[in-house]
Length: 168
Length: 168
Image 1: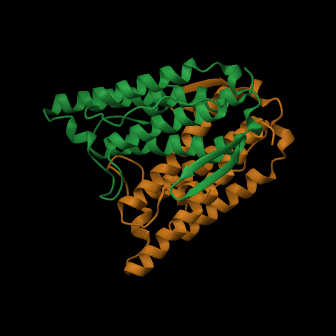
Image 2 (image 1 turned 30 degrees about the horizontal axis):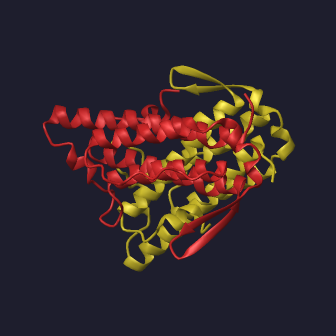
């Protein structure tokens, strides 16, 4: 195995998003077993002024997708944020992973030196490709996936770090 | 900037642990402003059967420290898990970062192919160095740092993703 920008971004994102999909599946099964509407989980939050589960997942997917596209120097597809159920959120993850896998590894070659601009509210952040992955893309994707995990865990879903890590 | 195993591990870990220290500082300031003992935050959890803040931070530090040492092929120092206050937890982070910075970048050269064994409960996980970082070290460190963030956020500490990202 070789270190590459692909290994540092797309490999990591497809792995953790796949694990997230498995975690969500356990969330849906928990709701069924406990006889409550799994939509309750979709709108749950860690704090009243934090984003709900649905948005955590949409952002995790978009940062993975858009970061990979920026590194490859291509325009990413836009996905609407219209998911209302766990099944729809899992489909969002699936199409994000499908997009990530469609990017050839060679497209990211040399992207460690690419100039990357990220709109962030009123500011525009500027990074070289490597720092962009280290300080923006990876932390952001893991932030939102872990927060999704914590929302489910806080609501009693029986998941553990092994699910988060994808049974390594 | 060059892609390297150092960039993929120690660079990322020192950055996020530094951000975590800043987040904890805001937690302590919040407790002072609201006139409660910040030790309440140290033992707070997202769910009754999840680990408290102190343990999230100790594990984040240890996984960063031990992963870097495994990649460098050296024996890491052992730090006792005896922190009871936010100040002590910030000191734990500081000595972890100091250790990470003491490892010369060259020590990780070629470690993407190194065989790494990780004791995990009754099992021993085996990875090549690159997969170890992608699937174990990075996900684990971010898992525990984000959970620490979520514990503080759940308890009303006024922090945002900009703090988590270290004001990028």
